[in-house]
Image (tube, rainbow, N blue to C red):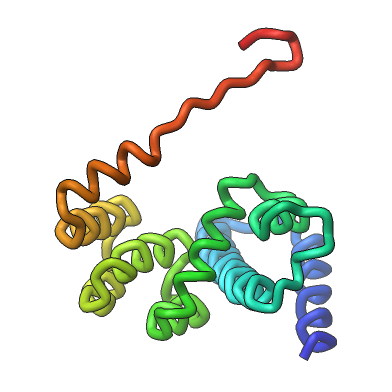
Length: 179
C-alpha cells in the first residue's frame, strides 16, 4: 500500500514539476484547476483520516509536541489553526461514516466537511440535508445552514455560556517591539 501510494505521489510530483502551464490555453487552464482541486481533495481527505488514526494510536506522542495539533502543525508546516481544524474534523468523522465516505470520494472538500460535521454532530438527523446542500451551495451558504442547525439544536443559555467561554484576547510583540 505505502509503496504504491509513494510511487503515485512521486509520479504526480514529477509530472506537475515538468508541466509548462504557460503553454496551456484558457480552457486547458480551467481544466488544470479542476484536476488540481481533485488532487487537493484526495490529499486533504487522506491527511484527515490518517490524522484520526494517528490520534487514536497516540502515534504523535514522544515527538516533543504538547498536542496532536502542534504535532500536525510541525509535521506538515501548516498553521496551527489549520491543524486544529483537521484534528477536530478527524475526531468528528469517527461518528459520521456517510460524511467520511463523501470526503474520501472527493464529493466534499475539507472545508465543506468541516461545516457538515459541525452541524451533524449536534443534530445527527441533518446529515443528508447538509450533504445535499454541499453539492450545490457555496461554502458560505453551507456555513450559514450549519450555523442555523447548531443554533436550533442549542438552547439559549448554553449558547450564551459557549460564547462567553470562547472569548479570548491575544497579544504579542512584533519583531520590531511594537504591540
